[in-house]
Image (cartoon, rainbow, N blue to C red):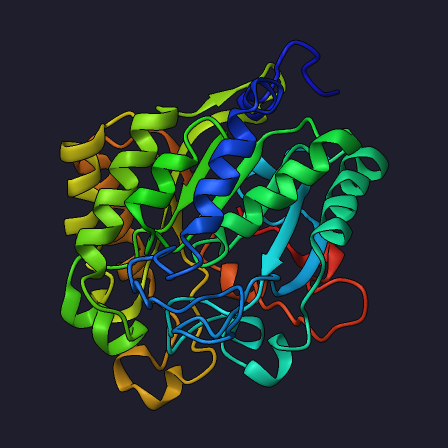
Length: 337
């Protein structure tokens, strides 16, 4: 059952008119696009382009109930997940590459704001999902807020999850204060050279760390209801890469010392060599048990006691197919925590 006393803060912003004001501010950022750190400068109201190759209306590849997120997000009913198409990174090992990098595919997934708003409210009302989880929103922040704004009169009232690669604009994030209830950022790398080589992105470490600090400032440590389902707070994901290309020790140490040892960490072992990864020898295999154990021991060393650790067989579970009819995840095989 949903907590009857909890009210997402975006509802208060909506009633006061502040949500509409924030929406207009965010949409103005699309006129000379600075929605993410690439600052491409194109007018997305009239042009489809920039690094993300997107215009005004969003690419939405799937809207579904998802049971493979962290237990506090999937809960006992599921997370209402909106998968945006395209991305502002180009990870050579992307497990969602069909929707993030295959332009022939995602360019055909443009959806109207009204349609997506109705879909997420249907997930809430018909499935009873615990939250609405926007995946890869960094290049669609204004569009995400417009969807929320249009869904509220239809009855939207569950927490909003911002599920991001962390290559986020601080200007945009600050405008999300009070709109997003739960931040779910990745901390992908501790080294910009690795980020450039494997995700085709510049200054990732600086931007990601600044973004995560801002997220924690807004929502603080994870808060759950009496059923153990998340209502508010920060959960930081770290995907272990083979040959320590993710810099696990440096990233987890930074979280503990520069953000808080109270941060909830989701340590992920689901890496498998998807997309172009087999072209890169250091990424051409799944992780090994000593690598998994070493990352786990780093959590203990720096006192990061709150969170989740994926099973070693997670790569067998997380293999979505966004061309699959109806649902990108096999219902019986989408949980690895």
